[in-house]
Amino acid sequence: MSSTAAGGSRVLFSSEILSAVPVVSGTATKILRMQPALAELALRCGEPGALDDIEFFLSWLKVREKTPLMLSLPSWELPGQDHSGSLEGAVLFYEHRFAGYGLRIFAPFDSTGRRTLVSDAVDSMDFAMRACRTLLKRGAQGILISFRHEESSLDPALVESLANAGYSFHWASRQREVPDYLQLEETLDKTLALIGSRTRNHLRYYRRRAENQLGCEFVAEPKISREDFLALNRISAYPATDEIAMWRYDSLNTLRDPAFYGLRDRDGNWLSLIGGLHSCGNMETYWQMNRYDLKQYSLSTVMRSFVIEQEISRGTSRLYFEGGTSHSMSHSFVHKRCTDLLILRDNPVGRLVPAMVKRYVPSENPLHEFLEEPNLVWRSVKKRGLRRGWF
Image (cartoon, rainbow, N blue to C red):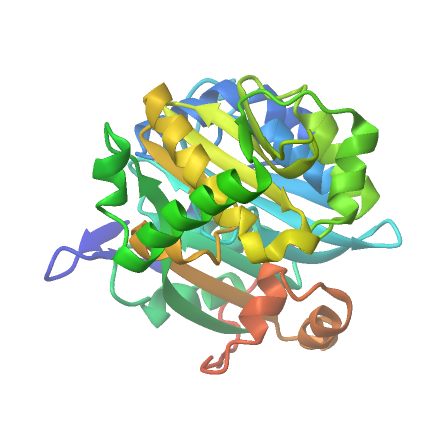
């Protein structure tokens, strides 16, 4: 049961959390089987393209030795029915592994919440709580969930109502503004007019400089061998491992409508490469490589200037950067509000999770980054009610 409080915000009663448990799908094969329904759900929820190429992200998890997990809420929760064609919501996590074993520590599919939780008629906070309750029931020791939540604050009572299911835990949350995408207008000049003057000048200046001094040329469909791709990765500003670089190269052949662009100098040497996906009139940028020894030319800025122009010519509406971007152009992005919620079980294993994350998880991981937040306020909740059975 639920009701609406003054001001239009939704109040979730604990009985709703207890009774509404999503369906769990824990393998890449099962998740891929629901790809059409996931893509349609994202489109219906105003996130076109967010779940169009789940196979790309699932293959990344395989490379990084993480286990995918999807919790899906069918439009009609009736036993025995096939719900793969009709979804009201979906939550995508991955489970950390060590030495091949699952650690029961779950992190969001992406740091912006765009691909982690997508819901239609279901309130995002409602569905987030149902997802957390389901994972706790299955033995989760730590859960970080990031989701789009337009409310100005998170109601502690909603989180702490999980204690009615018989769980003791610690939790903390934060809300942040996420630079989501760059809106592309029908012309380059109109698009650049939306960008701050300093960044706009840089996009033009560094492009002219690279063209004049390096003979820089934009290549819409670069032909490059795997060996040359790996070689550029090794001399790039932030090189990935060879394994990750090979996965990036090979994934270009699996994407339905890949976006793959390059810059080369007058002698044919590769200066920069960028890869991603075209979907639902948008471009999703997944990665970029720029030669480190030419950093004075700001090749990242040069590439983005060309990409913006190229995508406008294609009629692209939105330009996304997976994982965000530190480039100053992000100040001109459309921003969305994101809520991060971390729940840690109050038991010997759960209390070790922060130390394990800080020691073994890379600093760019959402869990690590969340725990480094200096202004977190932790709350402790003791279980209320009794559980029947064991996980």
